Image (cartoon, rainbow, N blue to C red; front, side):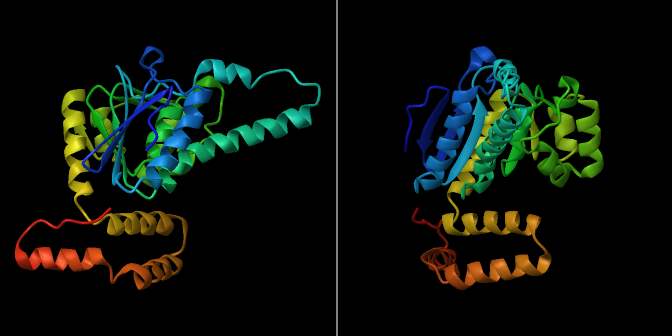
Length: 270
């Protein structure tokens, strides 16, 4: 597993990979190197069998303050041909979309542990994760309208499916900040903890619980839920039938049955 990132830190213990945004002096703002390293890390963790669950967090006082303002300024560079400049910007946007989609594409469950600011692209990133947990001091905000922008890297597409269309519209239009406690009430966060320390401990406990389960079953379940979100019920039923036709009779199933009969915890291979 790769660990030599300039803007991230990664550790792996007992099946749980902790991936931290590591620009605390800039509130973990997403600059160009961090964008590219996030995709590389998601791909690497997906390909690392020993990493069964991923916990995504931010170093320092905040989860992520959004896209680096210097990067935004760079989008406005002068160019003699407006059409070519527009084409380049389109490909830049779709590339950034792909970075965050990799956390959805990653076969392992990804748990976001959010404390402090979770603004703009930071919320896009959290929305691409499987589960979101918050501390009471967290502040979630879809900030783009106040910046004169349309959010374009995933939050407008994913947030309505998490909190419902009405709530998503309100948050996107008003740009208001949602506390960790309100985020839990809105189901934006699965749970709110009192402090960042309790948040980390609680999320790691959940991650370790998941890491002890069948990796194959978790990967298949993630795939089925994501596929069902984007397809008809009939198509989704066919997808999960196809998955189980190929994977149901697995060593994990045999181990789960044996462990149940022998009244012991199961031990699954990576």
